[in-house]
Image (cartoon, rainbow, N blue to C red; front, side):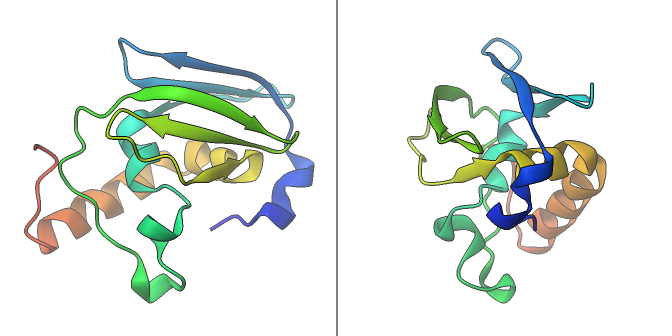
Length: 125
């Protein structure tokens, strides 16, 4: 996971929520643009509630297929706090973490689906 210490090399030039598509569009000064699904952002939230306090404490979050983003709040000039419509709002998404999620979205998504199935959970409520 990207930590806040790694955020300096990433600069976000645009951040938009597409409510209908339930995605966050993030554009970096490098020209890279990622459309990250709200579901992925929610289940990979950098909060202690999701990540725990060590890698072996990470929780598999199910039932979030339809989650949306209802709030975006800047945190300094290096991160954003997202509020989801399930009222989760404790994750601080650094620019580095958003870049990591965007760049590795397919692998992260595949791991999530594998872990969800192994835990006997579903994406549906």
